[in-house]
Length: 316
Ligand code: CP
Image (cartoon, rainbow, N blue to C red):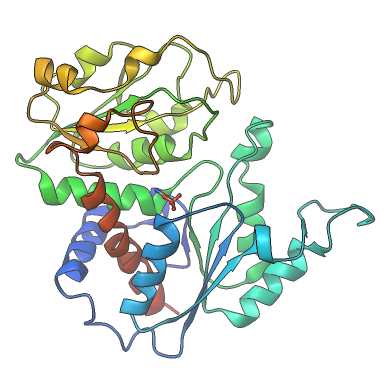
């Protein structure tokens, strides 16, 4: 595997999930694979889980790791071509990514969308420039439109905790005060549509995701109907795809509570990628109660990253 940017880069999704669960049982069995190999993790945006879990995964495989918070510690990057660099940018992504490739066997990149220009964000121009210019295998640490390491960890979590062969999985929109990217819900939808699950997406009118990611899902504006008898409920806010990046008020009632779960989904396990804003996006009573699996889910980020890195190391 030379690129991990979406579920479409994975030949056999069930095999990758199984590998992640095997690595969880035996984390240090493949330390020889990463000996004298370097993973560079390049962040254009903040991170807790992705940074720590991917670093831990690489160390488990015997790799060396370099972390660069390029937004804070690097030279100001120019991302556009054909511009005279007489403004605030100091280094072009062509040289910066090329140099990083000289120091790395695999590079991970995190680059969020601007949420202003849909065409620009959905072209994945920043992530794709790193891929083009660094000339080594690249793992997405979340890009403008997808978060595949998160989605793989989510699928690993569902596989691990499910109590029936084909569980009902619901992605439900949640309230927030900021305009958030569509990367996590896009990606979760894309992975669930390829998994052996009964998948529903619930959101208020106006928060339709790009149809490219939701093909095969049941989509509804009725949250209670959607979560009825769910086995897993994935809570996440996202801003509108159309008009792009918009946030409309009046949907505070979409926050999941124990009362809602007790009424229609008493056996549901509640997931969230984190970070989560308590009692805005998701109620504290759920986060602190037995139905929440958010910490377990975050723990599985290590095994998801390790499964991907192992496959990349095997094909270097
Ligand atoms: N879920 C997730 O990607 O968390 P971070 O943004 O903290 O990495």
